[in-house]
Length: 316
Image (cartoon, rainbow, N blue to C red; front, side, top):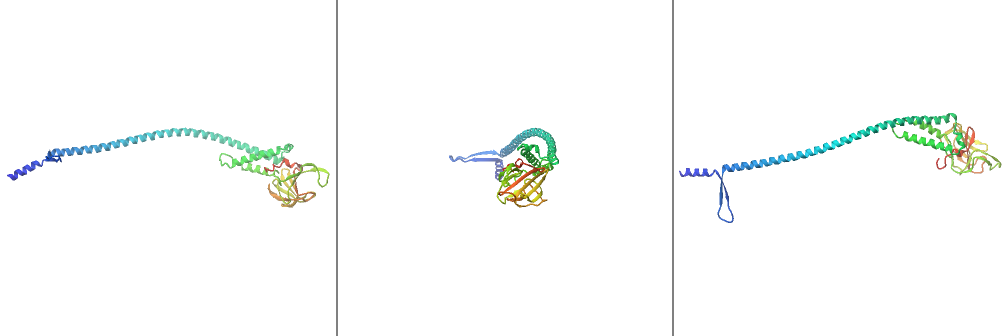
């Protein structure tokens, strides 16, 4: 019976949870008994609280992240609207520019056509009639001004041809026509030096009487190269009475040039030469008192003052 009672007592006591407090100041130990049911209930409540706290933190974190995403989306939306507005403005500007470009392109094409027509007409009229602006030779500056204008036209055509713009017409043919025309004009100094005798009436240094000097004499050292003043065909290369060793070049359009008193000829009759090609060397052959070049320009066999054709020496 005692055994049975002990077991019953033990089983009854096992339904409680005992918590002992052992203080350091006193020897009395305090023991608190909590029913096993309540202890389990407390543990369950603690677990549920912890679970709710974790779930709450998780949900709070999700809400915060969602708010950040919403704020980011709102910012992106505002930026997108701003960019769309800017693109709309730029689209209007681009449309306006395209319209202006189209109008400008049409005007440029019209200008190029007129430019080609005027240039062709200008050159062709002189080539066909053999006219080298004889009336302008009355004014010493008119011819050179005309040449400068032609060169500026040629430079402008070059810029147009090299611009690479599809809208601009190709002016190669017009450019080449101007190049050929300018090359046929005797504007290049055949040799650089001091003019020892000008064009016009003078006293001949050997004969001693006053005669008309049909060109200019340019003093230069013996052996200096003489260059063609313009492109053309050599129609004479040999000795000529009074002139010594002489070269005559036909430039077309009634123009020709003569180079005399050379020490050596470097070209032959029938040869084609370019402007600036070496054709002879300075000498003193024929009726001459010293090393120099006698240079003439003729229009339809009539001599004209070369200084009205030649460029300034510093601007050949």
